[in-house]
Length: 74
Image 1 (cartoon, rainbow, N blue to C red):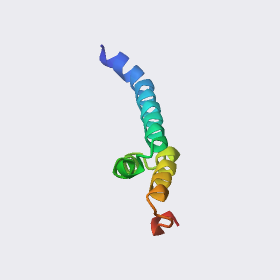
Image 2: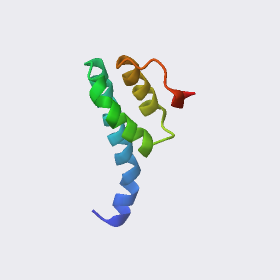
Image 3: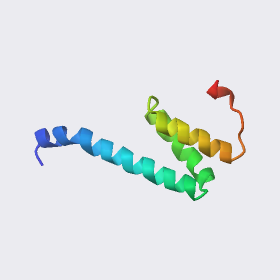
Image 4: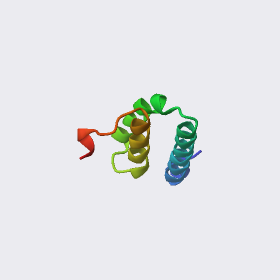
């Protein structure tokens, strides 16, 4: 793979990776694995602070863990 091709394909590959990651996390939430997702989603939120889906999924996971209110969400 040439550097030019890698540079051209990188955004598409990253978008595909994020889409697959989002679907996997949604499946884990559906399987009630919310406690195991909190650390992963916290890291993802730090890595991608402007993306909405990790924040929404983190809020769902925290709620299902019994966190009904968190000061950092205000």
